[in-house]
Image 1 (tube, rainbow, N blue to C red):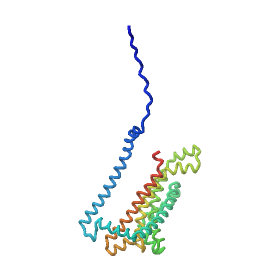
Image 2: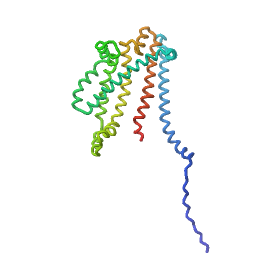
Image 3: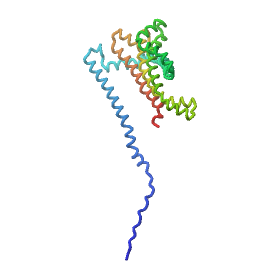
Image 4: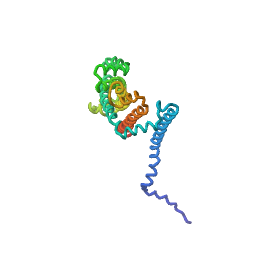
Length: 284
């Protein structure tokens, strides 16, 4: 009688995945990561095109002297940039913005941290903040020009002072939002003062500081242009006021557009890249 033996299945040999197969497996996740970026880019392009389209529609319904079209303004801007005439005014205005922004951020951060960490300081400076935040920016600028004189110092102070209380409130609220449990845990593990500040407090405060900086920069450049319109003889704001008096809307819009593009570059490229580097730890 013949008996048949059933052999057990052999154990599968260890297989190595080829680089091509690994890339094939990794491709879907990479595409999934790229889709949000492509979608955001497409939406941004559509947003810009919609604004330009509305501008075209407005220029068709109004006189060219009142609202010239985008092409006419772009031609004037290109000529001014090619001749180099506009770059000097852009540099002057940017210099004032950097100084005014630095003054506003340093004072606001100091006051914001002090008010956020000390109840007594918060009560003491509350009247100051409320008083300065209710004074119109025009009054502040005119007061600075009358007290200090028609010079750069007055223009910078007039642009920085109205922004300080707004940024101070933002930073104060951010400091108050620090989780005390994390500080208590750091103290329980006997973390040093340096470690508590840079590893516990800084990651919680950094987002509000970056947000305040971007918000403050968006306000400060408008205030500087306003200060130049009121009392300076150079800069983009002065040129806008000069061509406004001449009723040359092409030049007015070209100079305004030039600085808008500069500030968009600073906001999106420079500050956006800096923000990604600062918050790299979030993806880890």
